[in-house]
Image (cartoon, rainbow, N blue to C red):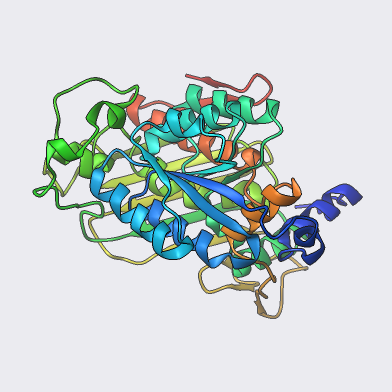
Length: 404
């Protein structure tokens, strides 16, 4: 891989988004000029994001509104806000109502995956900045609509692929982008568990506690189903399976490390081979994606054998092990192969949430901006569709269209 010189503006942008909170930027706002945050989805992940806002003390942010379709989640979130900030936030089961409230500047979107793209589009069109959990989308047309809406707006959007704020991976990205591996031709990701990873207890869920139509949103109407509510990750109405739930974490590294935003093609295979419990999403999955710059990415995952993980980047000069965080000349037979092991250094940076809130205040570009989000969404949608149709899916990057 030939390392191309970066523009001055790109260097400046990356330096800005990787920096900790700017004291000058914070002093430019009064101490009472808080960023008012609304939470859409206050379950496990949403509650963790609330804690991260509370920990970002230099951001001067406060949660003023809670939306969740499940009453116990709302009540727990309200109690947390009261204890943390000494105020009682407004609450609703309808995210569109929350988006209409003027005392909300930015939203944290942490509802189930099938809602992300639609809620993100609605949020920026309502004038709100947004932190949107990954995957950015699992249905291509919805993800594209959200991407175009954000690009059209002046809103700050951070996608929750938090590995972009991992100091070790940031160091690995810098080294790979420098060309240290030579030409990268293959990337291998493998994730393995021996368990039904998304099992949740639903025996205690009462219909009267769930705003069921608001949960279903635009998905097919059906009678209340406690298992679908708690274990939505197992059903195709609400996810495209492992591609969206897990591959998004890893495939996001590809455009970041190798500066190639979209796959050219994707194939996939998989199925339910062990956990035959009514689930509709695979417990074993394998996708192969080829990219225009000339490399192949393999992502494999199983819930059937805990064989460990692999995160390997193969170049003509050597190999990056992004789990062990080292680069060696292993596998290379070229005259310029790496002769000494290189330990990947950490890059100084603040948290993913702090980076988002900093950019909301300073109107900057977050580390995982909408382009990063759409890049992983395209790959996720291609792999999921390839599995569904049993054929290779291609992408037209000029027209931003899938070719089936």
